[in-house]
Length: 502
Image (cartoon, rainbow, N blue to C red; front, side):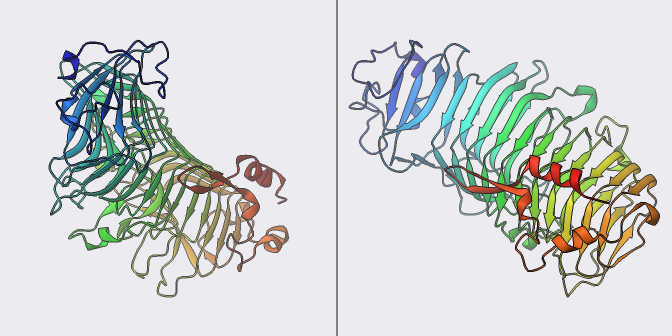
């Protein structure tokens, strides 16, 4: 075990700044290394990851670029605030690749760790056939206490073939989980950033935790940002069992259509929380989600959640529509479901969402399902396309999922459609639809006298031949080493709505 080695000299390791940590430094090279080496210098590296079981405060572990490790890796890293632990790459070339090839459920598992930075590693886990719960990177806090300040940075995870069916052990690129009965265990500070997740079945970045409300111990300071997700057929980013999670500046695109081959109708959405309160989802871009038989929206404020905020996001070309707000009525008020209360959807732009081809699909560009409470949808720009195969378009739809919603405010939105759309409010109660601009063929608009059916100012702005239909000035771009993401410009869209003349 690594912890059996004594502290080593830093002599000869000048390229790496150890600061004042006083920790040890180790090297692993799958090509030129040997497990009989000391592992303490670039000239004497280990060969396999199995040499590393536990890292101590201040330790640095470097994997040689160009290495390919045909193994699984499970380790613990217990750093301190003053002496973080670093796992990183060294040398030139491609990121070191942990190529599990289905040898384990998890290609890499980090457990019961704190003050760790894990970065610049490539991970894959594709077996001969799909396997339930297969994952790329698994970060676990179990029967431990509090795992503090973990940073997952610039990790590439790809080709993870878990089960494609929801609830049957679907796989994930990156997965974090907290649990424990005798010792309540949570994350306080978990950042997942600058990661590239592609061709993973079923999900991208997902999680699990204490979900029942009589035993709810949420993770704090969870931030998921600047990640690129491609070829994901199911759910993109799902924080579960968190309080105050921030999901921002992520790009999910080119979603696989593999979910359509599932033997059952699959529910999947780009970004959404569950059993989480005070989640902020902002400055993201989600496009081309191909699930549509159930859900398939860009964003979702789901049940067992309070005070979800979805703001300044870009949603386009998603088969199921722009946004879902939902609550499972049958379980509301039980330990499994606190309901859905206080969701806010504001300052987002939705273009060409709702491209499902079937005329019998009943969801809308905005779907409000079940007994949601005190929901606000305001100051969004929504442009819905023409889909020739579909003659049953709904701008807002409500489903009776154990009841209907109460206290909805739909106000000050810009709603533009290219073919006939209707409002299907069902049994929703105490709702108001006021101050909205409706351009196009709408029917059954509630509170007709409180909305604006046309506006010369808006009509002159809209350009059907433009990529952004004339609203391009409301966007900005954010460029990282991974991607260029199109996000809503906070200042521009707020000024736009403030200046819009009624």
